[in-house]
Amino acid sequence: EGIIRPPPEIRAVADRTALFVSKNGRAFERRILNSDKGKTPKFAFLHETSPFHAYYEDRIRFYEEGGTEEEEKRKKEEEEQA
Image (tube, rainbow, N blue to C red; front, top):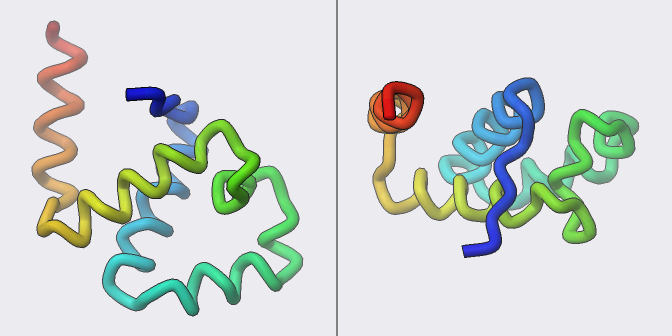
């Protein structure tokens, strides 16, 4: 699949941002990219050159298609137990 999962602290920010973008549109993403925050490592996943960009885009699709954070937590717990 070619998607690299970011470390937990980046994943949390990517997941929250993806959820917000899925609900509020790409304008929110552009605001971050154009702000000082968008230039920090914390938001590097927003840039297409980031190895975590594909994960972020995948999260947006997941939320747009009706995926929920609860569903995601369940999946993570199952992975950890495997």
